[in-house]
Image 1 (spheres, rainbow, N blue to C red):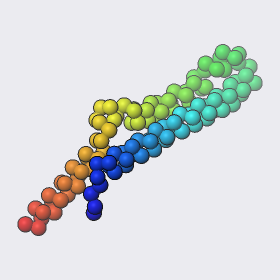
Image 2: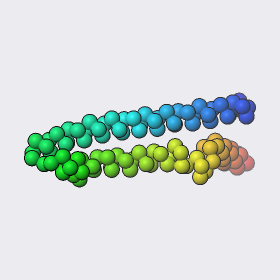
Image 3: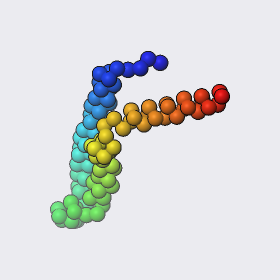
Image 4: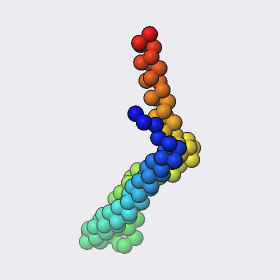
Length: 112
């Protein structure tokens, strides 16, 4: 297997980073659109049931979807933005190289 040059490795990491950010932005967009739709449906049913606007909007039933899905969005945010700052942007490639080296050492020790 041919080794990649530093410039090629940087390009691969940058492409991966852009892919992660694109996925994250799509997640945010879907979060907002879907939750607005779900909340609209829930509020309309609550209003038909006789609740006031404030009761319908601020009820646990309406806000729970935002909160639960928001936790998953927070985890996604941490994975895309927070984790690279803690571990470094090249963490994946360093870990991959470490595992490949470990496998090569195991094969060499096995052959001896």
